[in-house]
Image (cartoon, rainbow, N blue to C red):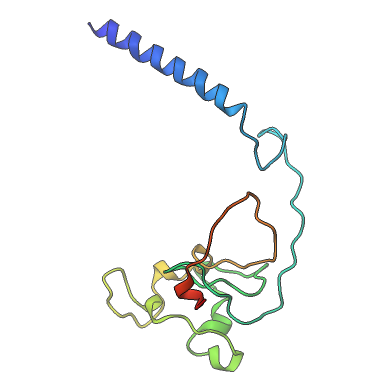
Length: 149
């Protein structure tokens, strides 16, 4: 009885592997024809806009997008370059958006004196934007209640 179950499982796994292999032959990677064990060519460098107005959000609860480049920004446990402009202490002087009050709460909504450890690494949620074409076609439409249209 055990041998029969094992044989059935092996047959199912083999047939699933064969069908997955057949399906994978029809998929084109964004890497092009470059094999995984080879280095692909570097992507074209994109231009970031100069620091500008906040970028409109496309969906409810979307973290604000970064309207400037952040290359060479250090964000580690000892330093966070973002706080140079966006801290509650510096935002007015720098003309930047201040950090949300939600970043000073722990997971139980207890108010903290400093930024919560889970909100300290800004680029976990916030990303810079460039004017670039999408990598794949999509039909995404932003939520109109947010954009006011």
